[in-house]
Length: 179
Image (cartoon, rainbow, N blue to C red; front, side, top):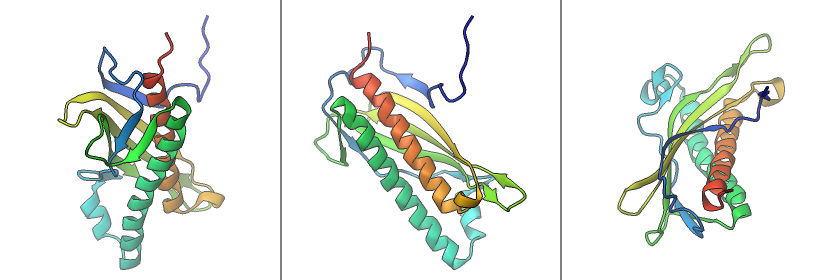
């Protein structure tokens, strides 16, 4: 009889995976900045969501996306280093390129008597320079909204960081598979 422990499941879902695993022993992987095109924010397109923001929040939203890309990269780099995989910014000579595409953000909210966590969904592909996809996974993270974590900016940036760490763990398993 098996048991399932909450939090033990892998936070990614494999969409496509090269069966011959060309990533075994890879030493370096180039990472592009996160993409946000065609993203949904809650029930709206990003354009509709942003149109409803005041000027200050529009500026914050743009800063949040840049910070999400930075936090994703840093967490991915740190996690992948454990397998000897060097993560570098976009580089034309790289053998493998990683692209993260944020497809959905639920900002969530905190209003003292009610709260909803943020949720970020990202599709991540590893491909060859010619565009051929080696692996593709989807990763989802939620960050609880609490009095100590009430700001949307904090939660979605934490989502990106946690997704970066999860992608790093996925890559560790592909670079150094356990037989």
